[in-house]
Length: 110
Length: 115
Image (cartoon, rainbow over all chains, first blue to last red; front, side):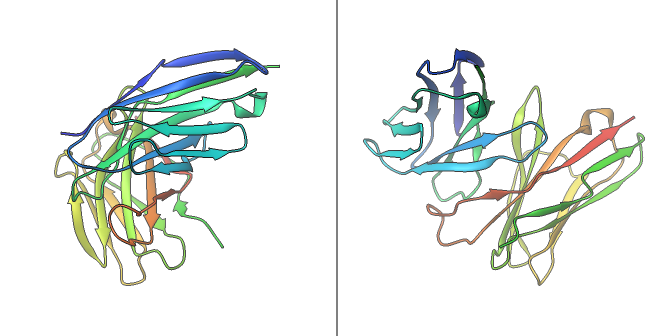
């Protein structure tokens, strides 16, 4: 069974203080690792998809990386508007469903 | 292009009742998935439909069911509601361009409260 563990559960940063969010996974035949952002009262918003170890993707202050066992979401010089819950999910084998971690709640203080 | 639309946004029911939630996917998307989100369990997969057929099912009791119509719109139904069914129900649609590249886009969800 696919499993995803995200750490830490919550993270409080000062504006401009860079950090990384961790997503560890076990999956039979990774077919994609996905990062989503979720704001309170809203559905998850797609950020990145990574398919193979060594792959990296960037968008503004966010950079996602992937190894064979984990993924990191690096946040450089975060701003208060980056405050949200960040979700990691994997798709394995021939299954099209996503298995999600419980998310990391990020708070960025001005 | 309109996103995934879920109705209603909020719903209050009592134990034992049944409820139907609706999801309209992004235009052109043929696959619809449903998830339940709770603070304790996070997002858990309910089921997935493609071309009116259930393609995948999660580990939920038979009280949870769904269907998809020919226009790709989907509904999910929960019968004999229990207090533990209180959750945010999320619908996601995708183009279904092959399993690996199948990015799911989510709606805002329906918040169900069971009293």
